[in-house]
Image 1 (cartoon, helix red, strand yellow):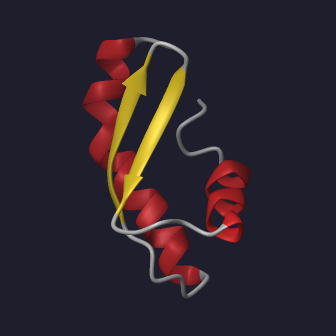
Image 2 (tube, rainbow, N blue to C red):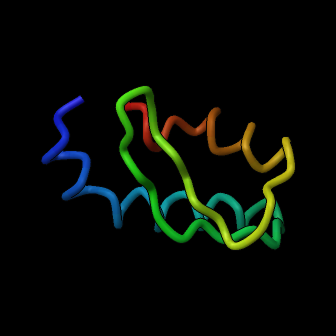
Length: 64
């Protein structure tokens, strides 16, 4: 994954993640994404439920 491209697109990832979380009526809000050596961290306003994480994972917003 190109780090510069990831950072440039990070606000789009947050917008898309929050949109899908709203669609499932979750009270979780993604604040930002952080690229780390071993993966990606999505920081939220509170502890996410496994359903919330599964929805984000299935949508592939930050994998591509």
